[in-house]
Amino acid sequence: MFFNSFEFIFFFLPITLIIFFWLGRSTENVKRQLPIICLIIASLIFYGRWKPLNLPLIIVSMAVNYCLGYLLSNVIQKPSVKKIIFSGGIIFNLGLISYFKYSNFLISNINRLIGTSFDLPAVVIPLAISFFTFQQIAYLVDAYRGETKEYDLRKYMLFVCFFPQLIAGPIVHHREVLPQFEQASIYKFSQRTLSIGLTVFIAGLFKKVIFADRIAEYSNLAFAAASQGIDLTFSESWVGALGYSLQLYFDFSGYSDMAIGAAYMFGIRLPLNFNSPYKAISIVDFWRRWHITLSQFLRDYLYIPLGGSRRGEFRRYFNLLVTMLLGGLWHGAGWTFIFWGGLHGFYLIINHLYRSARQGLGHNLKNDGWILRSIGWITTFIAVVISWVFFKANNFDTATSILRSMFGFNGVNLAQFLAPYLGFLRNFGVEFLGFTVNVGISQKYATFGILILLLIAWSTPNTQQWMDKYNPALTEPIEYHQFEWQKRFWQSLSWKPNKIWTIVVAGLTSLSLLCFSRVSEFLYFQF
Image (cartoon, rainbow, N blue to C red; front, side, top):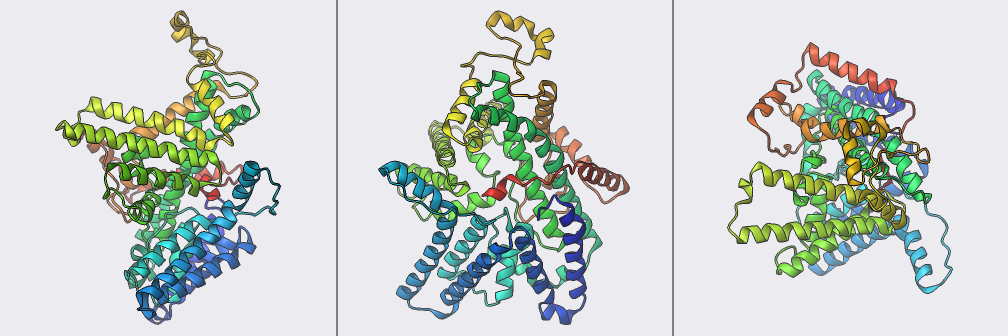
């Protein structure tokens, strides 16, 4: 079941809301935890609707981790025994994810390396296994450290399988979400809460259906042609790379908004997971804004335990590279994903070296003017777009073919409709046959579509900033540099519970529903 489906929007979500608030209408029912049981059952139905055979896996995973966490928090006191139980829990979780997600990848590489022919039946990756496994690993680590003492199995199950965040995050922390279910106010229906949550949800739906799914048509054509050995032109390769960058941006941003909006309808605030990353002025800034909860998990449970920056500069950069390589592997069992993670590791190392060099010269990086910030922004954006080519491509041949075209190794060909305006560039070797019938990209729709979406991603506030007065997410959005007149202008257009915004939201909803030509999967569902 997808957020962007009629089944979810018109049946599952409203029915779950009605039952939840009906059960929570009296204090007695709240004490009996009936609303929580309702959400657990609804979440398991939501998960099982995708593939019922996956249900036993997530139930066993929750049961094992809850028992281990309970032992670590409340029963076992002897350090050596706690360490054994904790190690067993980590092995269980990593073994689970390794078998389902990486076993075929590992066997195929062993066969290629030593010339064997080991055969393993195809393993279907269970939906959301990376997300709910990482979430529970964090819980076990905190239980081992004595930072949690959760006794209630029902609340633990809800913490893991709460449907707004189950499939593609955010990766929530137990201390962020569990205390919210103790608040009696969330069990009482609020028209204000529903309208805020619904607005955020519709904003995400619009991004997914109107922006991400439409631009995906052009990026898919470009990457499909490259994978078939067709040499793309300069324009086609950039349409493919920028199109996928924008598809992924609005797809993930849309999902994050829909997750936050759906949770807020139940009175629950999830952490912010996506915060205008294409406005970042450095790679460090980018990873503070892109998949925020995964970045925090990798920092807290991998980078810092490896030693972080406490053991000298070389060890710091080594730890950073290892963390990003494993972050790439988390996204998928493929060398292109690992390379993507390693590439971002090198980006981060270069960024830190640059910052250290400037600080050594006595520069205050917070006082950089608009010229340096602009250079940092465009450099970061281009570096990220290049990395997305490896993220999207099925293999290195496809990725390198696209990158060669992007950097002009096949010549520079622009869109034909630009010739009357930029014809003088022919003197510099530029041609205007940028789109071919072999690839089939519509030059005008693709060009203007990408330009419009870039302007939206670069210059407009994100959903959380539109809604900042009502704070639907746990984390405050990161502020980005803008002139005072810009700030006042966008604040004047921020969301308000009035008739104008009701009409706007109704219009966005209608347009999104009319464009439901097909129910498309969110890109992060595959991870």
